[in-house]
Image (cartoon, rainbow, N blue to C red; front, side, top):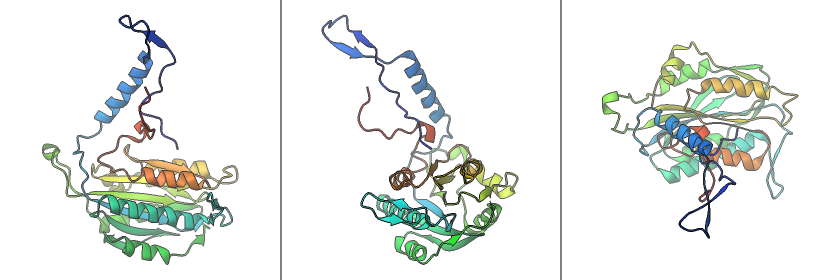
Amino acid sequence: MDSPDILPSCSNSNVTDSNDAGNVRPHKSREDFAELRDQTIENFQKPNLPNVNVPEKIIICLDLCYDNENSLYRLGDGTTFTPVKMLKRVLEFFIHSKHAINKQTKFALVMLKEEPCWLQGFTNNPKDILSVVDYLSPEESTSETFDFQKLFQILKHEIQVPEYSQGDCILPPPYVVRMIVLYGRSNCVPQIPQDDPYFIHLKKQFYFYIDILLAHEEDCGMYKCEEVYDALQDLDNGYSYVYEVSRNATKIHDCIAKLLAHPLQRPLQKNTDYSFGCRY
C-alpha cells in the first residue's frame, strides 16, 4: 500500500514578482496549502507523546506458512527466493539495521504456523534471534483461517507495556513495545477478535504499536489477498504502518526499511514522504 506524499507537488502555474519582473517563481495553490495544513493538523492530533528514540521491545511475528512454494522472488542478479526465505532475508536486514540504530533495541520471536508459538524472549543480541530463525522450516498452509486471539493470550503473559500518564506525558517511557506481523498467506484469512479483552486493552495503550507487512501471491484472482489484507487492517488502532507486496523483491525490501522508523518519531502513515530534496 503506497502512502501519499506529505508535500504536494509544485503547481504548474507561475507568477511574476512585481519587484523583479524578469524573474518567474512558482507558487503553490490554495488547495495544496489546504492539504498540507490538514495533514499537519492530523499529526498534531496524535497523542502528546515525547518524540524520543527510547529503546524498543519488538515482537517479530514470523509467518512460516506458504500457499505456493514455486511462487518466487527474483533479485536483479537472477537469484531466487521462496516466500518464507524472502521473509527471513528481510527480517535479518531489519534486525541488523535496528540494532545499528540503537543497540538497546530488544527483539522477541513468535512463530506463526497453525497456531502462534513464542520461541525467543527479548534479547538485544541479533544472533540470538537469527540463529532461531535459521532453523525454522516452512510448511504449506492448509487452514482457511488464523486465530489471532491465541497470539494475544501469549502476549498477555509475555509483555508489559509502560503506563501512559497525562500529567507526565513530556517524560519519555523507559521503552515502547511494538509487534511486527510478517504475514505470508494469501488463502488463510486472519480472525481478529475485536471483543477480546486484552486486545481492547492493547489498542488503548499509547506505548504499544502493531505494524504489518503482508507478502501475498501475485494472482489475487485465485487467492483471497484482498480479504486477508482487509482482515489484517483490524489490528490497526490508527497508528499502525500497514504494507502489502506481492512477489516484488525490491518493494518488499523497501517496505521493511520503512518499518525502521521509531514509533514515537514517525508521522501517520498516510502523511509519510520518502522523496529526496525540495519539491518546490
